Length: 387
Ligand SMILES: Nc1nc2c(ncn2[C@@H]2O[C@H](COP(=O)(O)OP(=O)(O)O)[C@@H](O)[C@H]2O)c(=O)[nH]1
Ligand SMILES: [Mg+2]
Ligand SMILES: [Zn+2]
Image 1: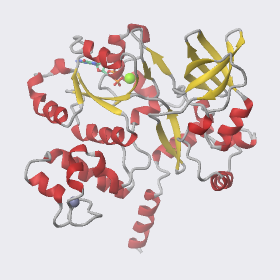
Image 2: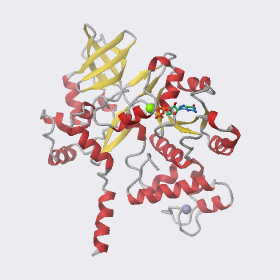
Image 3: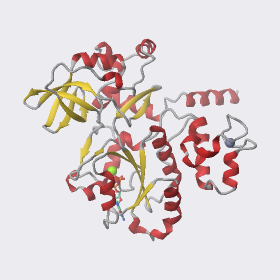
Image 4: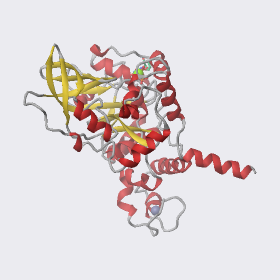
């Protein structure tokens, strides 16, 4: 009896539909406009709340071969030559705010493009590079979406939903103390970055709270793996020049636990941003009534940063445990040398990865991170937040 119930729980966990899903559903029920574009309701022109599970499945079948994240097909011939290239910096319901060299435009999406996107179960998202036809008075029409790269997405009912596109890099932010550094969390974010094919920069803030020499082993390890590591202090200004250099001219996403100082760092390098600091913003991110629309903010020194609570938990939505090892860069050279081709590098015999750990080629703590991730993946509870 007991045994049966256990099996059923595991199965449900595996199929996901867990916390993230619930919060999406709740926010959707509360009319969160940011979620409009994640929802299939536009398809039939039905109003919010009219989405049925059945509808989702039907559409999936007819268009099953089209991936949400495969955008090259979005490019339509513009209807006229008077189009300007721009970047979508915010999406609100049916409107997109597009920044161009000729200023900002409040845009709607051209009908024919909208229909094409709907058929592909996609929509214009923040970060998209688009061609805009100005319509006077700061209004415009989006004629095409240029091919995307560096897409961040999350899972919703087993499907990928793009949150933001054309991301150049993710800054994985931790703090030296308060809260103390969590290398396992860094490793998870690194795996997500590797899988998304997005450059990762490791930032350790609040370096003013301890002797930087204490972090040397960790900094050495990640540097050796090829990751850029920045030691920072939003309070004293230490390292901020290098941070600016790494953000300038790129689209960046910051990820990391609450309280590590992400907002403080951004305010310190660009006071115009005026982001809320401290527990208040933490509350907001979890709260019900704040806007969760993805937007990207422009730095005064050039470049953009995404300001989206949902992106805080930057993680993979469809990571299989068999592929985790591929995203630990130092394991790659050994993977083809295991005795079993489907080796998970856990308890198998003649495992080249475990041998490499024993011989000191692979850091033991990193290997522990790997084991944890594979176990969690098995339990279906991979989570980048909290621990
Ligand atoms: N000592 C110290 N405290 C910092 C530093 N950066 C931020 N803090 C504090 O850490 C807390 C959380 O900062 P916040 O920017 O809101 O973190 P976020 O949740 O990651 O955006 C605030 O009380 C900040 O004043 C730093 O470099 N050194
Ligand atoms: Mg913050
Ligand atoms: Zn192995």
